[in-house]
Amino acid sequence: MKSPRAFYKPLAIGAPEPFRDIPVSLERMIHFVPPHIEKMRAKVPDLIDKVDVVLGNLEDAIPADAKGEARNGFIQMALENDFGTTGLWTRVNCLNSPWFLDDILEIVEAIGDKLDVVMLPKVEGAWDIHYLDQLLAQLEAKGGLSKPILIHAILETAEGVKNVEQIAAASPRMHGMSLGPADLAASRGMKTTRVGGGHPDYAVLSDAGDTGSRTAYQQDLWHYTVAKMVDACLSYGIKPFYGPFGDFSDPQACESQFRNAFLMGCLGAWSLHPSQIEIAKRVFSPDPAEVAFARKILDAMPDGTGAVMIDGKMQDDATWKQAKVIVDLAKLVASKDADLAQVYGF
Ligand code: GLV
Ligand code: MG
Image: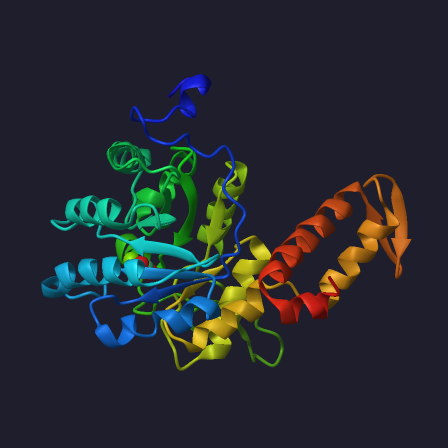
């Protein structure tokens, strides 16, 4: 365990100071682009205005014989576009793959000054973060970068879930983490072939009454993991995200899964298909009625203490804090989205 004083020291001479707090940015959807496909790269200029984060995917879903093209394609799309306030991330190959080292060495050298976040798959423990942390610091120092590149871990192995708190606490470079339900299901030996979402057989049966007819209530397969991830992230001041939802033909189920994650504390999800961009925007922007009510609470308790009744509901210091979470998020959304700013009344 590092001493508190050493924790915020740069890990290489000349590397930028680590952030004390994660920069505030809106990240409702992390939109995945396969950068080896020219037609997809051509859509990036349009995407930049539509999404909060553009991510060049180099890992799973990119064929083994296209790994080099994907890496070069990502560098090209980063060089060719101005991303403004839209985040630029990449998902690199995992640490035990033959591609990871070149992913990091080539990308940081070519476009390190434009890259906000490296998404690291299949993180098992703090040791994985320490390795990438040190490597990034060396490359930042070598390239004279002025801003640290952050790390976002995917929580997608049984070992990773077991060690989630140590992963969250591993470095000031930690941005947050995403649930990776497909790899996690495989790693845990779960019996589902779905990418995220529920399963009709994961249900609780109501008691057998006199009639003998019983209802099955479907449960959320991911509840435990999302809850564990949210607590680990928030306790260390980093950001939790839902990951992918693979059934593009079921937008309702996607919305419901994203909404559960939002209500539990997540700040965004991945969009793997253009139709999921609007779903994520809708879900991860707070509900206007909820924002209006939260503003009433803040107005009624200017110093955040005491107790008042609003519309028959008791408010106190704790509900003031709940209201502040919603109003702060709405303000962040409004700073990027003029339509929602108007709806919220900011
Ligand atoms: C994402 O990477 C997943 O495995 O679900
Ligand atoms: Mg995965």
